[in-house]
Length: 285
Image 1 (cartoon, rainbow, N blue to C red):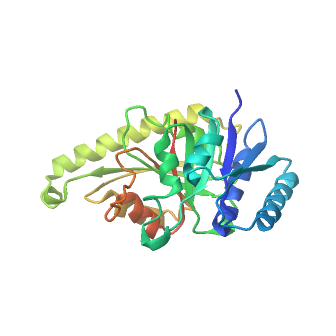
Image 2: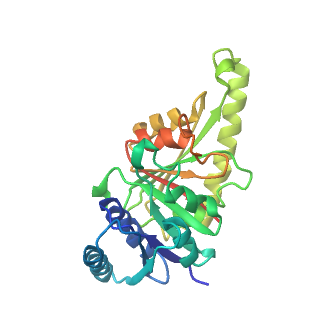
């Protein structure tokens, strides 16, 4: 079954920016199509939504992409439950949505539609915070922080494949986290051991990526890796994003690292708030 991209579209300027990512990702699929879904919650006037959907469809047509834009659904209970009802469940469904500051200063994810979709485990989700609209959904330099999961790059690979051909640099980052109370006093031997573990892990990931993405498909893709010891992995990711001049940071989500309603101090919120570039938070079914 072919993968299908669903764009959760609320009519905001942020959603317009995310639609560019949806269009560019659809261009990498065999079935070049996106389904734009709008839930009528009263936040935007119907004629304005119609005009915006027509504009998205016109952009798709220019790139030879089919856009199913007449998918406007009534609100049932709330926006997130309505989206969960209308987007087909399963590993072939990919939902793109926005991650933007919520009302009353609640943060970028905590208590938002994006957080509920990421927690749902019904389909694949990527929540995007757009910092640089001028990228038009085509980041050239990705920073991929990896937490050392035993399955390696398995969850991230489908999302990486959907980034379009302008992508020229992929920086893999492994932050070896150390308890802040021990960080100042860690022995040099222990430091070298941790760094070696990180380099070994990233070396295996680089081999996986090269096997999955052939030189014929990505002839100009440059792979790089960096391992660093830190007592604050979120701060380190922001530092490395500036160092490599990343266009986008991609982060894998789990129940453990997604923010709850008590979001102060949450690492994802810290990155979303201070990132110098676009941020994509993904979760594979």
